Structure formats: C-alpha cells, structure tokens
Image 1 (spheres, rainbow, N blue to C red):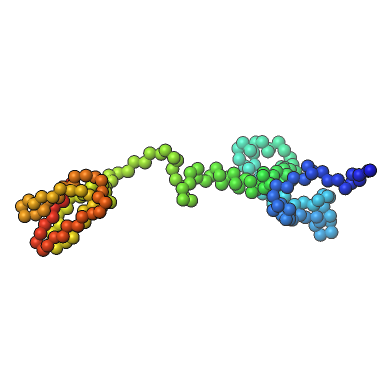
Image 2: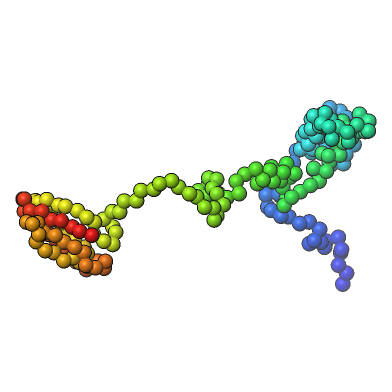
Length: 201
C-alpha cells in the first residue's frame, strides 16, 4: 500500500503562538500606480513606516559628534537610502514573542522608564524602605484594653466592660481597673443628677 506524500502534513512546519495571529491581517503594498514592486510578497506598510522613521533619525544623528563621525565615510545614497531600508528590513524580521518590533520596543521603554514598585496602581518605595515621620500624636479610643481616665457627672449611664474596684471618696464614686481581660457581660452604672463617677487608669 502506497501513501501519497503530498497529503502528509509536517506538524513542525508552522508554529502558531496565538490564534490572534491567524486573523491578524498585515497591510502590504504590491504596486505603485502601474508599476509593480519587484518583491514577491509586497512591502509591508509597517516597513515603510520603519524606513521613514530611520531616515528621520539618521538626519538628526548626522549632526551628533560620535554618530556623525561614523556616518561621514558613507556616501549619501548609502546613508539616506540603503541604510534606512536595511534597518526597516531588520525591524520587520524581528518578532519578540510574536509581537512586532515597535510594540516590543515600546514595552521595553515603558518597563525601564516606569516605576519599579507599584501599590494600588501608584508608584511606591521599595520594600524595606525606612520612612521617618515627624512628631506623631496617638490618642487611644474606647476599643483599648484598659479604662481611660474620665470624670462623669450625672445624670448618666456608664457601661464598664473591664473589671474594676469601686469605692466612695469625697462624695464621688471612684473606679480603678483590676484586670485587662474583658468581662463576659459589662456592668452599667446609673448616676443620678449631681452624682459623680471618676475612672482612674
């Protein structure tokens, strides 16, 4: 039994990195008016943009001290025609993870110019950086583990959630905390008009 080799498919011939590439159409120039370009697959429009950009860069770079000295020995057709076309051809051939050269170059520039550490989509300092503040005032609230100094005059209802020992002193009730463990049920102290409750920490 003979197998027609024309029907066999080489699985390693084409490598597709993403399905997006299958539907990505690249615009190409095949002819200018009636003159057909002497290139089998046409010239990609992206390559024309690369060549124009390279030409602009070379026009500005020839006035620089070091780059200008390197470009001086080349004749004008090489500097402003062959060299931009060669740069454009090389950039069109470069593919970084399936992306074109300009997209990969933009990602590299954004990475190097962007912040190294981000928190909440904003620039932040590196982990482990010591930040020194000025004078910082701290005020405890009712959620602390000890009673705060207070002087309450009636009429009022005071809820105590930490154990304390109470005694009467100079016509007022003085309460001092005896433990930092909160009670299962708090105790309420009702003060009549004129009565005073003093809480000592």
